Length: 181
Image 1 (cartoon, helix red, strand yellow):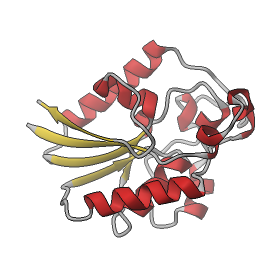
Image 2: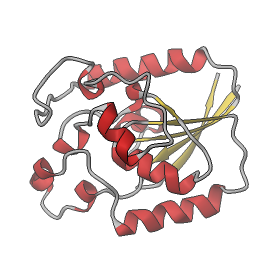
Image 3: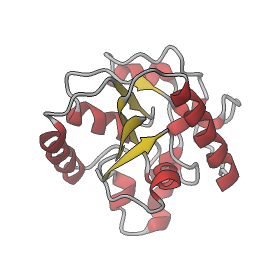
């Protein structure tokens, strides 16, 4: 049995937007000051737990959250755990751009257009996914987990993606323990 600690990213600029339609201007949104405090609180809550594996989505808000909660760790970046693509905040950035902001992280397994299943598009184009698309990525993630030997795993991901396990939308920096076969 694997114990997987699912953690939703901290509050992002898009989460904090008063007008939900304004999210068209938050490409690959960063976390807010409030989000930084949420992540710091989660760090204090989890700092004494030991994990065998650390996993993170390649969207900026998750990596910023991860770097606060697990400051001495480098995650495996897994693109299939990204958010359900629907808004500008769900549009990613090229690995070379991410490397500038997160120089310690390894993006070598990440394709240039990872947020669009590596199909070349205008980088500011929003390609909306269906729930079936997101479920397919979740199945891919479960297959990836099946290939791993680690038993105690920390995963920093996104609300809609994680709701496939939790059955609900976790709060920002919400935490759910998933016991997986």
